[in-house]
Image 1 (cartoon, rainbow, N blue to C red):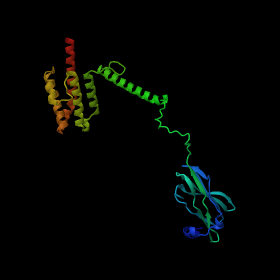
Image 2 (image 1 turned 45 degrees about the vertical axis):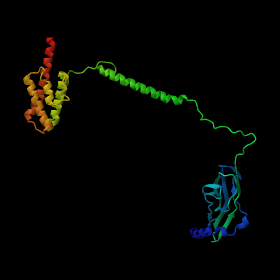
Image 3 (image 1 turned 180 degrees about the vertical axis):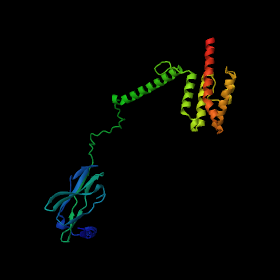
Length: 315
């Protein structure tokens, strides 16, 4: 079938010059001879194709005639197949947005026969009438433009917003309750929050640091950081000193008027000095200093706690 491709293409260019078969007896059809503006109509033509034959249909273009538009390309459907002879139908959808009467152009079907001959079938175009909607001018009354239609609000539209509002109110209430109870040192359910005494918190933290064996693993900076942090928290809670935000020198200045044994305070100062050198000067503490760090911290916590108990008993 490929051998007929070139003759078919050449003949397509010369189609208007070819002699029409059967003197124009072949006609294309439209599904309706009249439509309203914007409606669609199907333009079709039928033909048969014997075994070994090839066919080419001329394309009407995007606008077959001025005022009529083609929606898409020509499609080819098979109506039947009897012993190899195909009954085919070409179809294309047309529309128009201008009223009037239009004569569609002819369509050409180029047939490459099995014996090598070429036939041109000319299908005359039908007439298409495009009408507008008639207006009764005798009774017609012009009206002003209508306003926007307002539909009533339904429950389905309102319920999501109601749910969202309730959720926001609930979240605000929970936040206010949490802040108020926290200021009262209570949990969310109103029960008093029982905090461990400062010395218990400090001793628990120091024992945890001892169990980690940090300085034995070469992590002296982490070791001294955890020890001094536990002591700073204890000093802040026990003596009401802002030890967590202060330098070591500032903290010991505020501890001058506190009831702490001078020898105990001196050992605590040595511990913080060693810790500051390790943390900020890349100093490597000796094994003896490392071994004495936690016992010194525990002694400071226990003795200051016991002195506080003795004061309460004397009172």
